[in-house]
Each structure stands twice: as structure tokens, then as C-alpha cells.
Image 1 (tube, rainbow, N blue to C red):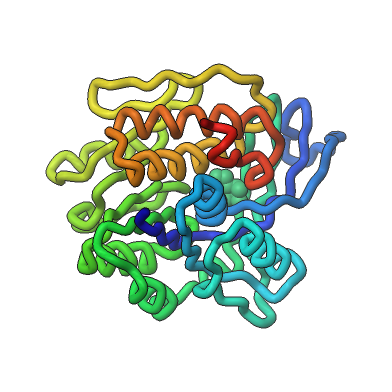
Image 2 (image 1 turned 45 degrees about the vertical axis):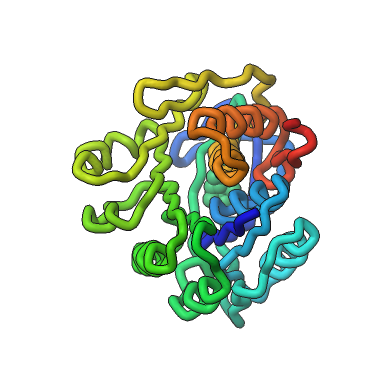
Length: 279
Ligand code: RIB
């Protein structure tokens, strides 16, 4: 099977649950505090690896306990960590996550994620073959995203972008993107721009499922515990579907099943299912 290169973020998620969000200046009690492995890039890489795809994560962490532990955990998930840099005296990316009734609110500090360099991407993609996949998101610099997409296209890879969190995208970049997978909010910002390109658009619609053209794939109902990383899991298992020669809609259905399992569990990476659970 083909390989997948993920150029993306690695975050330590500081998660707390509460019944409602405090107002500015207000202190409230929460529960269930945990530090969990996260970051859109890392979550998507973990989900890809758990689907059985050979996954290479290109990223950066600080030399703090969080970064070092996460890289160790990625190895346990069989992710190739050869192109992750550990940066001295820099903090690993962090996400402060408040979960209220299953939904979350997130504040990010990019930390080491902002310091990924082109050389890492170049070295990683030197090991790529035509037909492999390059997946990226916007928790690393726009410059790295653009560089990765252009290089990947030059090398004949399938390129997939999850434009999250939203950042302005230089429209000329769409020429290098095969699939873009925004949520409804991100879609509003990019919809007009992609009209003139061949980029395939798949939109995640939360509890309404996901959409490709006129086709809507509804969610698989499950108990909502925590939606963190549901989108990441969907994207990774969608790619698993594509690389297993499924049609786009069949791949979306696989992504949907995987995401429904992820939302029934706590946290980002701890919630991501392995392929045998989906089968
Ligand atoms: O997509 C979920 C992720 O977004 C969390 O793990 C958090 O790190 C933020 O990056």
C-alpha cells in the first residue's frame, strides 16, 4: 500500500470538562482534567497509522516532557518519526481545551510547530513514491504548507489539505491541492476561490455528516462524549479508504464510521480507533 506523509502540528492538549464556559473574569469549577496527546497533524498521523497505513509525521516538538513523551508514543503507534525535530529550549505546541457537553473550545500556542523547516519536508519527501499521499493542515506556517504542497505535486503525490484552523489561502495554491476538507465555517471562506480549480471539495458538517457534490453521507449515531479529533479521524480514515481503492463516497463512509467511534471516547489521540474496530 502507498505511504502517507503528514506535515503538521504536534500539541499537548490540556483538557478540562465543565457545564458551561466562564465569562471573562469569572472562575468556575470543572472536572476530569487531563494532559493528552493532540495536534491536528499528530492526530491525523495517529489515525492513519492505526488504520494500517505506513505513516511519516513531519513536525517539531520542544525538548520538554510533553514533546519527548509524544514522540515516544508515536513510535508505539508505528509512526515514522525520523523527520520530527526536537528543539532545545522551545515549548512543545499546546492546546487549552474546554469540553462542554461534548463540544470543545480550543486556544492554541504553536510553540515548536511554528519552527518546522523546509529541509525536514524535503528530506522526508525524498523517500516518497508517485501515488503516495501528502496531508497537511494550518497549525504549521503557511509557508511550510505551500512548500509541502508544491514539492509533493512535483513528485507525483496526492495532496490533501484540511484548512484548519482557518487562515487566508493564496488562491494560486489550489492548483497544487487534489482534495480539500474544510468544515462548514472554513468552507464559507474558501468556497468562491476554489470554483476555478479542479480541487475536490469534501465538507464535514458536524452532526449532519459530510458532503461531496450532491452526495451527503450521514453520521453513524453514537454517544457523544468528546468531539475532539473527530474531524482528524474522519480525514485519516477517508484517506485509508482512498488508498484501499474505494470510491470517494465509500471512503467518506469509512471516515464517518471511524469518527463516530472517536466521539464516543475522551480526548484526541486516545479516542482514535484501530482498523479492526471499524471492520
Ligand atoms: O483537531 C483537534 C486538535 O485541535 C486538538 O488535538 C488540539 O491539539 C487542536 O490542535
